[in-house]
Length: 213
Image 1: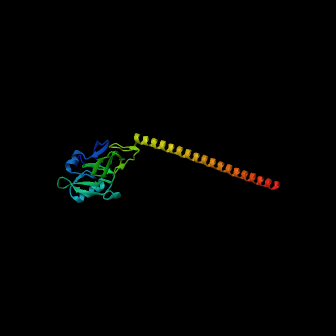
Image 2: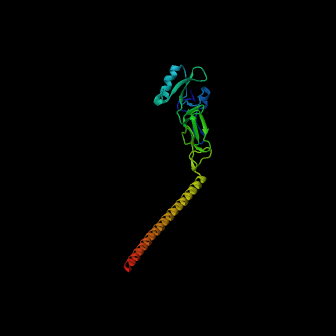
Image 3: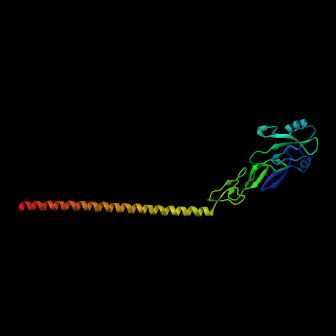
């Protein structure tokens, strides 16, 4: 098992981050399926002995903390490896030794498949789907976080100006309505006073005419 031991892997860079791949010796001995990772090297012998070896060589063990691992046969008879399923939000390409969160700017609907975040969406680390950006946000292809859009800011300013103008027009209309109402009340008051004065004059005239008779 020289060169293919548990917790021994090839450190590489991919999509802007560290990725742990199988060593060349391990890749020659077995294939680790996409969507899975194989962290424990290989064992040559019976399947039962391999299961006992992997239980000691790799801490998750079988179904430890919901980590689904199983002994699988390698490329040659009598060669076994320990293959564990990647969880949601992780990315595990073929021949992965250790799982990696789906990187920023990408989404992994399943751990076996990775896609770049489409335009108009953003994808944080560990995303299983792309999230839509709002009209006020700018999200080019491969966005990890949304950015404020210049057009969105322009729309905000325009809407604010329109709202302010509408407010001023409404205020002016209300002021004019109150002014007209006050003028109408004043005119009505003047008319009432004039009618009362005319009534008093007529009464006085009638009284004077009665005295003369």
